[in-house]
Image 1: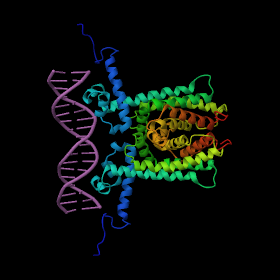
Image 2: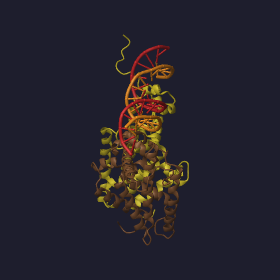
Image 3: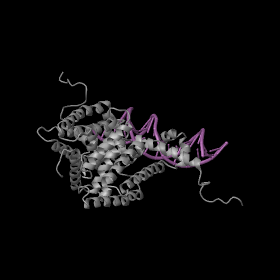
Image 4: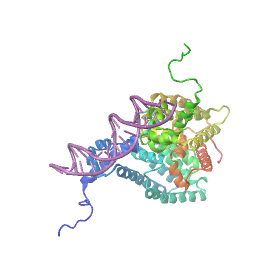
Length: 219
Length: 219
DNA sequence: GTCTATAAGGGGATAGAC
DNA sequence: GTCTATCCCCTTATAGAC
């Protein structure tokens, strides 16, 4: 027989129509989940923003949970990519830390909704984060922790618990995405500008580099 | 007539029964809103945790919104109290900043749920935070900003945008409440201990004091 | 793949007896 | 102040025609 396809309804690997739809839906979902939370978000709102009907959207993502978990997975992928910034060969700790901080602040600027969805998920106790996903991050982080420990041993930075150092970097950089509503009120803006993010990157880098002893001279 | 009471059903000002109920309900609500978000939290769950029926609870708080807003208000009150720590007379900037940081981390330890409710509200764009509440924080903050600016003018700390300095202090201290689920996984604990919070307070203080130039000597 | 119709359940809020 | 009963809307998800 000429018909030998089995299993999934996927026709070819370049079914661009489906991919376009899925991308639009995921983008819409990221925004709606960020704004209303998992339970506050409705499929109707997401579908409308994506430009199709709720019933039609359910053809692409079979359930709300499934859609949400795909959004979470995408955010986690991006996060893990950013961690690679610590391991550029031939750079000093100060330069590596600054790259990392700037990359994370840039993520807050370009993907604030993803950061918000992830943050809300963690605040609620990570009920939808499967153990599989939970354990993806840890090995990656372990490597980064060992790297920081080696910097301490070599006297390149002050002796500081690496885990808490990462908590500090993550919180100070993600706050510009997660708490943008508050920051906008305080800065007196309706939306943060590129200059605001540049200010943030400069200040966070300066305080953390100097504060950890990675940078000795005055910023 | 001997019966001359008018208006409200409040009998006296020491109706301790009502207060006890309200306190129990608010405490339960803080926990449930923190865990499930505004929309995910149900009145049934809150009432059960508070030890009464949903219908009975609605006698004390007429609606879910009203209950939620009271929870938010309580958190904001606590937050504003903590800001007073910057203005202890006769202390150096380093000591004031450290008091403030330690107070905020202690709030993350003792009132994590309040912090989580507030954080989720901001992440979602502060839809329930009335303008009245929004504007309570700003004047208070303005005073603190002027204080930091005076430290800069007197050369007691490095020149740093005070607003971003506050964003940094808030994010690094509140992360131990808001993102405790993530931190617990990474530290390999089921619950953060007092020692963990002490580690956090020491590290955050050390990096920020040294990083801002408030403390010149090695931590 | 997209549509109409609808099942099925949850959850906020009210009515009224006691 | 507390209880039983109930209204009613909203939302997820499915069935089935086209």
